[in-house]
Length: 166
Ligand code: SF4
Ligand code: SF4
Image (cartoon, rainbow, N blue to C red; front, side, top):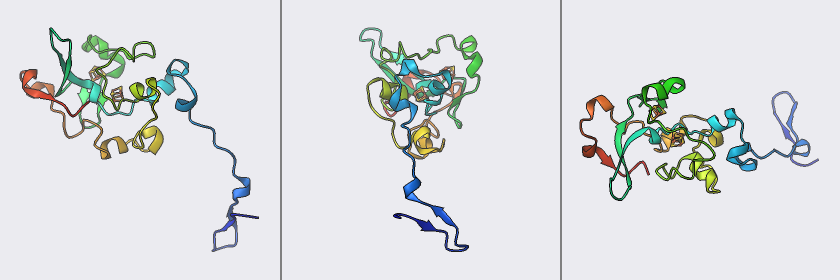
């Protein structure tokens, strides 16, 4: 037998590599965005909060600039929407991301899981689905935690344009 390990304290065999079963690839590697269930779709969000920063669009070029100012419903510490189910009642301009429109939302940050999968890329190591830990998105510096400022304290958005969310 190869690869057998023993716990060393009571003689019980703890693992045998002969018995190892092949691991199924995760859903985001086997399904298209349109094929995912609602729960799978929601779990793709890495919780970075970057899409929930206020943005400005140039009237002439249509170019979108990010600001460091959080949407008024964003919990900056948690990097999550504080009223997600009712959010569009409070923030009607909040966009609903779908498998159909994700490619049109070119303002999504390049790290956004929906954008990555839509263009055929894999999820990064710090994505909670990969790491198994919802904190890794923050530890990797990929979220707005510690960087966004509350809407009520911001003043004119033009004073807060930043490039780091892209
Ligand atoms: S940018 Fe994408 S991954 Fe990040 S919070 Fe928004 S939808 Fe979720
Ligand atoms: S309403 Fe919620 S989901 Fe929409 S931008 Fe604001 S914080 Fe994000």
